[in-house]
Image (cartoon, rainbow, N blue to C red; front, side, top):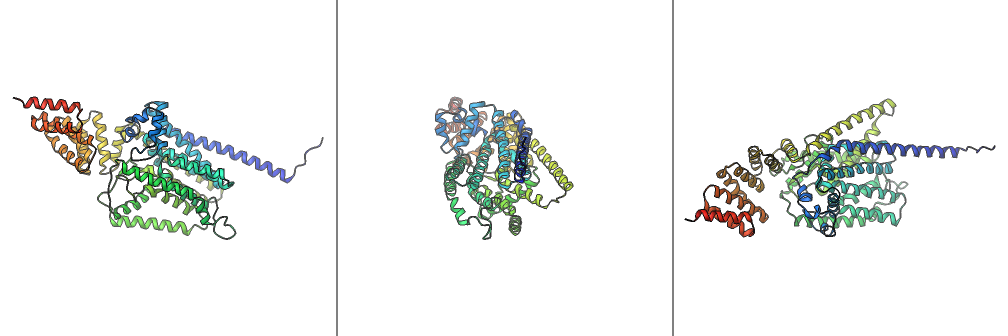
Length: 557
């Protein structure tokens, strides 16, 4: 019986095949652990409720969405709504309503499932680009379990974050395939995924910039030096021209949508806007390292930022940038990760202000991937090569990861209902008039009107120009039969709404509240005037008609 001759080449092929199979098994095990980790942290959201913080706009009070996937709904999704243009996000919410109705747990678990898929995709993308499964797994685990991700995953209205993340990572995976074996079909597939991602959230406009960074490291498509340079930077930029064109179009559409929307705005001067931008970058990094006292909204510093604080934050960012480039020759992942972080924040950092918030944790959903990758690769390079040291490092990372998961689990619990979320936000932030107003609403729903009135007084002190808080304070005081006390905040709210050109429905609601207060105070002429003003806005208002009849009946002899 003749035996096959074992050649050295055959042994190498068998070893290579075994290595590939082993790597695949380890990849699948790590992917399963990532999914289980996300399930352990976010599985509780199956028992959560919707919250009165955009969930009503995106789902509860939106008949086009609650009606499920319909032809009319699909057409509607491609319009400008909620100061945004993100048709894929609307379609995703419609699909949830088709599958789960208004069971909030189903909507939450769908977001958690997409986030788990994103963690696995990030593992696949980094492994494909770098060839390092262990380091890629560390970055994916931090991404999956870090508390900064909670807002994007546990908040139903923020489906656009996880959905845009899914398309971002799919685009990167397609791009890696294209760079390995260039071709028109693979290029168009990458471009198509990118275009689809822009319909989920405009944050993807920065992706062409990230692709150029990845050409530097780890793909090595434009390394310095005549021997290693595969393509010149100009040719790589030209390659991204269609992507850049789509980004520009998305920026223009987003600006148009925000102008046609009704977002509350602040108009800071240049110094305040710049100071907030640099300080927010520093605070994002601080939250990455020490993710405590997180909140769904951080109020904009209307009073400004001290010059010395802005100068210190600017100096810190400049020094960090200089250090990253100084070390770039041996550690190119440092400038790549750092520029990934800074570059992806540009659309949401407040240089062009599109809201009243200073910063938001959800803005870091994609940007912190760059910081996590830079840190993991740096620690991996600096760590000793001895097995015992490597084991100690792995143990330390496991402890850190467990702490992040525990902190995330606790923060996810905060998002379970209105009262829990807004009480937490009011406690961990200062002068947060929006969260105080929402907290008062949750207290009123729980029948705790006395506490709600005190919270609303704090909201008005924090922002005297916050019309909604004044209206709600007046209503709450009226509900406590303090009608005379309710007149001042209601009159101020009416003036505020009229000066700011707010919606007629807000002005009508204020007239109704004032009319009812004057009725109960026996000031029937004043009550009649306000009910007439209400009917001038809404002639079919049952409250206006009934109030006007009562006021006139009481005035008649």
